[in-house]
Image (tube, rainbow, N blue to C red; front, side, top):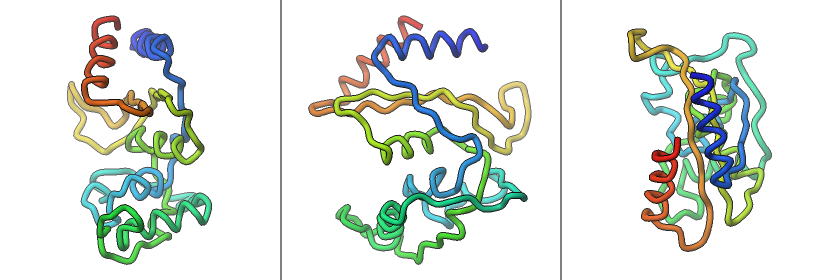
Length: 168
């Protein structure tokens, strides 16, 4: 399995992707809020994700990022949408949890800055409470990436996925 993950990593690097990283213990802010998941969403429930007892809270990012995420949740900010229409609570966003998906790392990377055009990926451990059977465990690896550039289309994505699937 580790050899397979290394093959995936090598192929993505050969395709011009840069590897992202991120903490395994994450705040709900990056795991959910920055990805526009409402704070009362069922996927944030204790039956769907883990949380930490100690330390229970982590640090939030800069005030600029917090203000934008808060406004997007509450009223849509400048997106043209209406948001979720509730009062966003920073104390919920500060809660620590084992990362439930690597998309939190993509959100972090976007706030750090990206090259345009650019390609980024991560292969990372994630944790979710699940019924353990021959197909499921409470921890798993997830591979994801982001591709940024002008003029990209769904056809570009399909072509990239085809190259990846055929060569790995």
